[in-house]
Amino acid sequence: MELRPSETTRATRKMFIRDLVLNASIGVYAHEHAARQRVRINLDLTVADETGEPVSRAAVGRDELSRVVDYEAIVIRARAIVAAGHVQLVETLAERLASACLEDQRVLTARVRVEKLDVFADAASAGVEIERRHC
Image 1 (cartoon, helix red, strand yellow):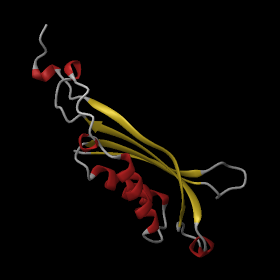
Image 2 (image 1 turned 45 degrees about the horizontal axis):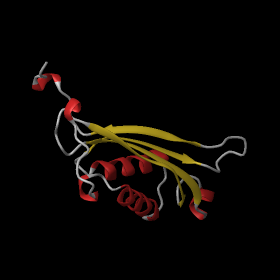
Image 3 (image 1 turned 135 degrees about the vertical axis):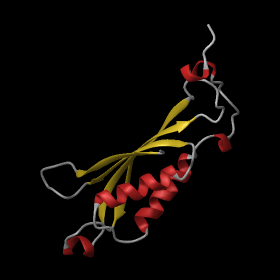
Image 4 (image 1 turned 60 degrees about the horizontal axis):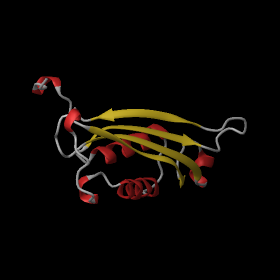
């Protein structure tokens, strides 16, 4: 049975960065302005396959970096965003990271989790998770 265009879905893949820990200048309180603190960043991206083929016919594709979203470039950009200066809210940092991920038109969805690791002695972390997508 041949699939009609309305019954096909563009092939996608999931790309992720796990547990990127960086020292950030983040927080609203005076003591948070005085010293950097550890944040953990997790990124989950839904990426469109460049072939444009229906899922049922998606090919492996060329073995070339140019055809995929480069996770090293994503990490470098995340480091630069964190290093760019003080941010008051984890929500703001998460939005900046999501926006940077979505600059690549192949990224359809960006789920970003930012956690402050040293906020509470009796908790592993506190933070936020957001999901943004191309409209």
